[in-house]
Figure 1 (cartoon, one colour):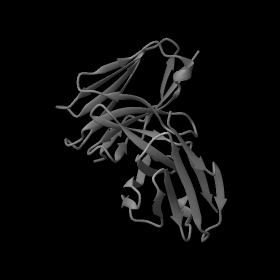
Figure 2: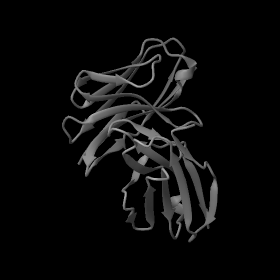
Figure 3: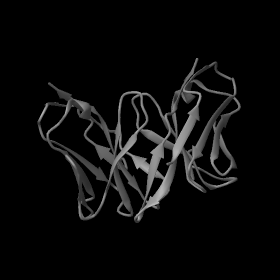
Length: 114
Length: 109
């Protein structure tokens, strides 16, 4: 069966520091991969998605970037964190089910920028 | 207008009650529809996909009305463990999901 891992689970970083969040998927090949952010009291916002190695689409221009160096690895980065980057960061992967793509989320990283 | 709108609630119901959540979406090109459940400080989990003919999974029934751009979720015989936030989700091209802000359900004994 497929599993998705994210780390770290919790992170506290000062403003201006760099960020690297990692997500890996097991048990599937060539998945679509996604990064979402959920800010306090707000809905989930899609940040990036990838349909293959080195292929990244950005949904919202901001202080973050993403990379996919391997088929089942997706990395979210920032060179300098802002207070507004605080939130719950979720990685997801998708699989085709009938005529639709169902997405499954990792356990998330709760980031607090101080 | 938000792309996916839900009544935020909270819905406070006793155990055993039947509760219905509604959701509307603005983009008629939306192709796929889902309900996710999110517990406090946890990741969203797929509850069920919503098909045009409507579908049922145990105590949960989902309906889709494409003409009215309306999705519903019915929960019968509510359990304490059903307490969570229910997210209505639509997708256009099979890639990006657009999430509603969620409806909070609290089931009490």
